[in-house]
Image (cartoon, rainbow over all chains, first blue to last red):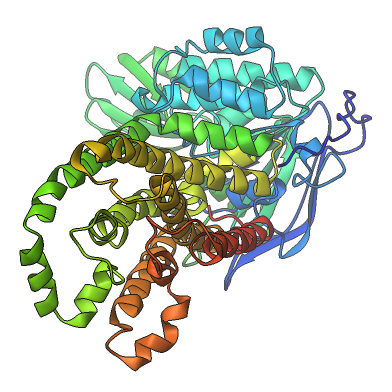
Length: 324
Length: 270
């Protein structure tokens, strides 16, 4: 039925400078809830844009509107100069949903073949290569896979047709650190080939690692947008857990430059450091240190940074009934 | 083409279920056929029993004047006015509610729609898959019945194509309910509503048709009941016509088109 032939999409990427993803004044309301509020966002070709935000910030709503699953209440969300409802445009998009669900009874290979067919055929070697790179066994039924392996199926189908636009909603969720790296390197590969990537995450370190620019959403508003270099100022607060072979008093570390707070409990000490950890490491060298562990920087900590330091003007109090 | 691909994928995904449904329906037919000789031979007892029943119950059997000991009376009262079409309804309504609404809420629809395929193609492809599944199981049932019937005399006095007539009428009857279920699911994204409307239509239609002989209030609505369309004339002896095949199929097409149109224009649930 849907067999009317479309002109095949131009194989060239858009000219540099034309945003591939152009979200302007986007507002999406669900009844009384405003999930996204006057959002402006652009992603250029050859750029990875990291969309950060806690759960319920509006990341997924933004992405679902961009893909044409939702109609904007106001404003627009354009991809490659048009709407993702247009099949010719969707042909050039790779999408990985945040919560990947596929038919469990089917083998991975059969699922991937189906998606490849819907895309008008994909080079078999490309699919096999991706499966190999991600250590995914395509002969197993999807339903029997672990969460991480399921996510890999999503990654393969998003990347297999070498799309010009990648929309990735928490792409590394459920993956072990090694596979996380593989996925991030796939993202970089596409970026280097000129693709525009919108990458949502609630993990700062992975966005830092792969994104060129970062936007932070909170309650549907963009509270900060910066290059990754600019953002690092905000993230330079680290939380370290130290373990010593014998009890160490908090006072031993309290005066070290950069150390903001120390909580000591016999041999265990938790430290928050702003800026470089070098002075702390030097001080530790003279103490009976046994083990150092660092917390991943949490978005909440980042918000402290934004609200304390920058005063972005947004209301930091959580609103009730907030939803993605 | 994309729609057909999507539909074919559904049949592939559910091929095991289809196998079991086919085996089940084949067993049902064999069982029904095996019982027939004893019903026929005890003849008068059944007739007397039926005479004692309230008219509404007899009406609900869909005998429409035929004797229960005759092949056409036996088949309509034991299969087409209840068990057989209800089994097909269970299969059809479940699949139809899943086609859009179910797969939307279980999250499997989203990724399909990320591909360059129209929403309408996905909807129509899936509804075609449901229709094909019902037709397949229906066909298996009737082929088994047609093959088994002569050995128990269940084909005596029936038209040559009796089982094909009945298969078509059964399909058309189930199609209306499937289409209503699909349409509500596609339009709202709610699987519960879809099943509710499909099953409600079947139940209300059944009651209206069964009670029409007793209460005038039901009589007035009987023309709207798909059960009446199916059973007004014996589906085994009546060639496919406007009322038992054309009308239900036309209504089905309208419902599918309407549901697909709304689906094409609405927000997806997330």
